[in-house]
Image (cartoon, rainbow, N blue to C red):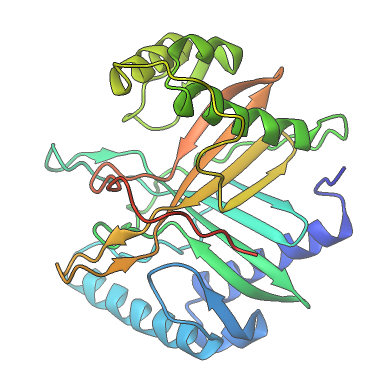
Length: 297
């Protein structure tokens, strides 16, 4: 099974890392064409398709950051390549997770943990598609200098069955959330389950109580298939990442919708979910339900 030692995966990670280093960190939008296909497809809400449009978007973002920095504010570009929490890849997909603590919406001056995700598709040695976790209501702001990266290791053991790990995650959603069944949590979640964000409870007992709270009338019959299959699902080593498309109302009140990808990542240990990273920000939790998910090809 695929590991980080596979040539395709290694090459994809090098390309994405190079892009983050040479374009984002170096603040060089003119180098976008070195890494990005001319016909880049943008699945997120932050920029239109094409390498030229992406380069122009980054140029404007860098200028805005400079202006905010001059005024003493914080930058708002979620793509700033702080050392990632992890980078995982499967086949032609590479996902980057970055720790970006955000202003606490309830406590002025405080921050809350937040994780920003972006997945890239690699074709012919270039980034050809991009799925960011940008929420237009509360676009992530760059953390203060010196913010820890919270980097974690990703197992490279060839003994790990990544397909089984992906099935575990999908069955977790199907048997727990689709079935609204807190009693099923124990079949999927480790007793010392660790949440990396504060807006979800930690521990198996905390997850059981969370499910009871949001589904007071459950359980219901377990469906044979997951009701909302993820638009993106990839795994490397002991990490599984999934993202679902949940279109959200435009913040201008026009009634139009924009594409928003809800990301979750899990570490699997001993055939149970042991850790969870959420891409949802407390400042703008997504509205449910949206139109049916659309899955990338």
